[in-house]
Image (tube, rainbow, N blue to C red; front, side, top):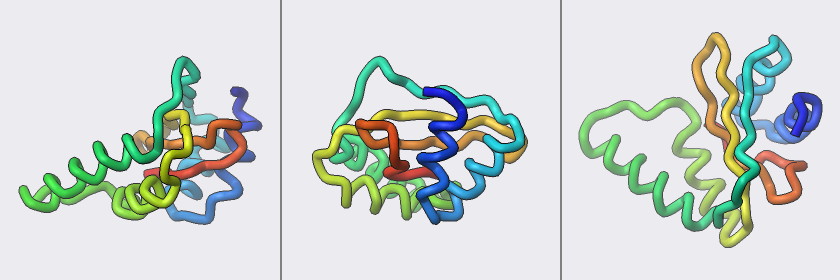
Length: 108
C-alpha cells in the first residue's frame, strides 16, 4: 500500500484521530501497513475493549480516540481488517483498514 492509498482511506474517516493521522501523513510521517495477515474486527474489539477497560479501572488516561475506535471495531463485526501505524510528530496512530484497503475502520 502506498502513501496516496492510505491517505485516501483516511480521508473518508471524519474522526478526530483519523484527521490527525492524515495530517501527519500529509506532512511526511512514516507509516507501515501490516499486510501479512488480517484479523476479525470482533477479535480486535475483544482485545482493545479489555485494554481500554483496564486503563479506566487503573486510572490510566487512554489516548484520545480509543473509546471511539473500540466502538467502531465492535460495529465492524466479523469483517476482516488490516492493521497499520502512522508515526509522526504527534506520536503514533494505530489504524484498522478494511480488507480491500479502501476504508479506515477505526483509528486512534
